[in-house]
Image (cartoon, rainbow over all chains, first blue to last red; front, top):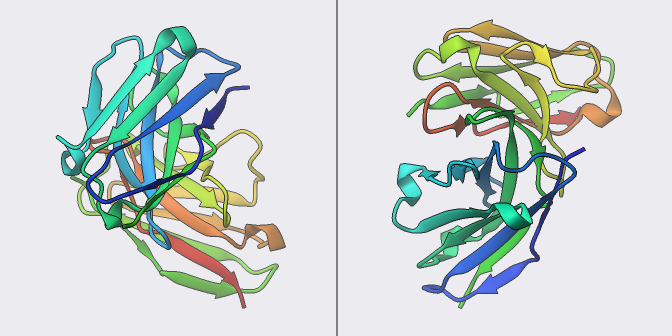
Length: 121
Length: 108
């Protein structure tokens, strides 16, 4: 059974950066895309982008292009998401999630534990 | 990008009743690449349905999905107390992946 464990909550100042990790255990890591999805307080889900670790090339939603960097380390089965130039409206819970089929962006059958990021001066 | 509009925003029903949630896409969703998720407060979303109508592992058969093209429906045949939660639809047939804004299913 695959599990995704994320790094802990972060409090950041506007204009700074945050980097969140997502460590997979119990299954195959490299062939399955990991997506990053965020949820602002009381809001819906927003796909930010993802990466298929064995390919290494990330894919980003246009809204976040230029401000987000998604990467993966196959040796440690860990994916990362770094968001720069933080604003107050980046305050959200950030989830990593694994796609249900290999080598494709798909529906997500395993979700991470979530990381709360608070951006406040 | 494909915009998904869920209705109603909030649905108030009693246990034992039938719930019908709608998800409408701004353009056709290819190969019925639509999923439904349930989310409870403080928890990550849980996959319920994929390919519009296939129940995920361990999902009770009171949950069913239907639809194609631009109109999709999640039906819960007889509501149990644990079903009151937030529900999202997601399309994954076109890039970028998009989600609906959610339907809150609350106890009447």
